[in-house]
Image 1 (cartoon, rainbow, N blue to C red):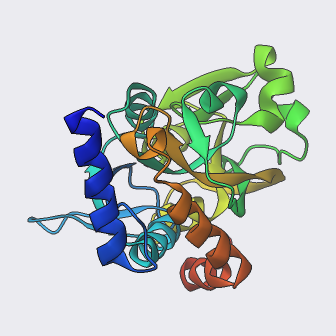
Image 2 (cartoon, rainbow, N blue to C red):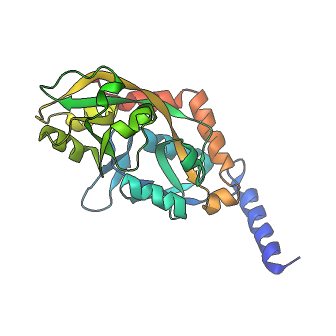
Image 3 (cartoon, rainbow, N blue to C red):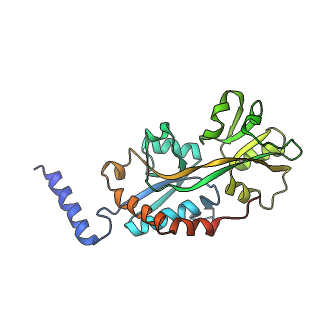
Length: 254
């Protein structure tokens, strides 16, 4: 048996012996994250950023139970997708599952609460009640995000992408856009206290499950060390921990 293999087996055996019932491999996981309250909250303290939010608290609790540590890398949403595809990050919080994303991300078998998408429009424009009414309009979306309920009309919608939702709301306020598609709770958080001439439309797109996803190029995935973390996520979903964290952050809808 090659020396390296013997060393690796002995190393894992030692960790298992010392770790008791916890994960056989304690890892530091790199999390690609963008600020998207209340799901992912990044607060710049002038020193080390502080991280919280629904998805962050779920992962922190699961990682603590499984014996792993976390390191956060603050990047735009589209950049986070790129890092996951190239193996530059281990985990991403909250992406929807799509066929393209499944090629480079493993989605843990513990879906997070559905994330309804609200439609915001200019304050004095006619109320949008059906997705067909978006055809021919300039609709703002987050760069890299997925909006399956509008895809049937994709050719007729003039998509405008931006790196963050606050930029999209400002463009809507200045009448550069006709509408913005945005997660409902995130919109309530972003617009609180801001005097923008925008309003929520009657149309709300049905929520798609969000997930905690793992890069298929991550050593954590390749060595199959992620299974203990996945089991903790499943337990948290089933014992009500997901719901407790969600309701702690949820705010009244606008």
